[in-house]
Length: 255
Image (cartoon, rainbow, N blue to C red; front, side, top):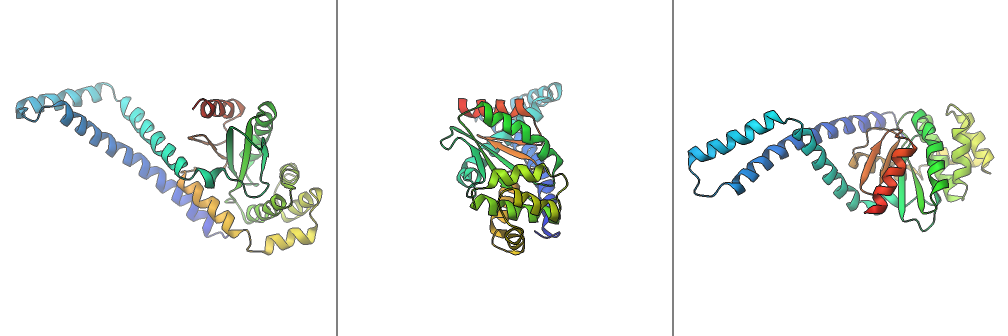
């Protein structure tokens, strides 16, 4: 992961968010016009049409709260469609990069960075969730955007996933404090991965495609950073806490 790739990812997220907001307002205006066309008979006079338009105009001014509500509903609908079109890519883990129920009825996906303090803060929430719900699976997707060490940590993480040692490495590295080459190697050793194996993974380009795929998915989902959670047809940005995660699971299960 290069420094050049990381800023472009953040810039893409910012631009995409702005496009969605502006697009939502444009859609709302078009929808209002379409609704007016449906309601007004083809033979309506120019005077009546102007009166109807004035009523719609005045109502929106008197109830401006419907604009963000409409935009939010539109964005949720679009996001649901986006998730559904990429669900397999989002929810299918890389090798053993998951925990919880093998045959879960709800999958929670976390896009994370080992250098992210909010991701570390979310660790007990995820542990509580998977420990209290026997039908939930947590899929972890590396999104190393904060530092070069993030990319190094992600590569060793993917090696651990291949070796069936993912959660041992995952927890060891988060428990080691700041992400450095030394803490990465130490966490790998605690998971049964030798220093030479960890260093070989870091030097390898083998895992670049998986990381690039995760970045592309995050952009598609309009992730605003890490952590980002995908549950059912919802995207939750930030360290939302156990209650929000549990509510997301219940919502997905209900649907």
